Image (cartoon, rainbow, N blue to C red; front, top):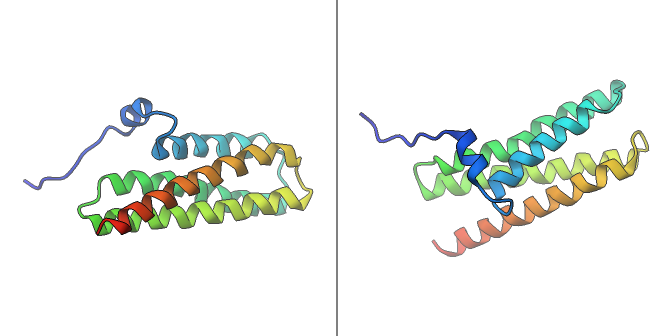
Length: 132
């Protein structure tokens, strides 16, 4: 039998601290879901929200996938994908903020959180790449 890592994701996420990037990405995904579900949508917002939902949830999903990777190279790869998704999430949040289609104040905390998550991921990547 192979030596695959298995996890109970719910238990792992509940036990992780707020400064843990996986936990924060998980909580951010929930915040995006709540944000999207509480705004009346039009055709333009529906398209943007679709992108935003996919990207924001991809951040955490790739961080969790990294935890189960079989090599350091794979681990780094999943973190790089998570960072790209975080950066694109930030882009769409900034578009929403400047579009005047929604209240800017509702987007500001999401922008702040994804910037912090991006910085955490980028810092981890720099550390990993410098310790080859």
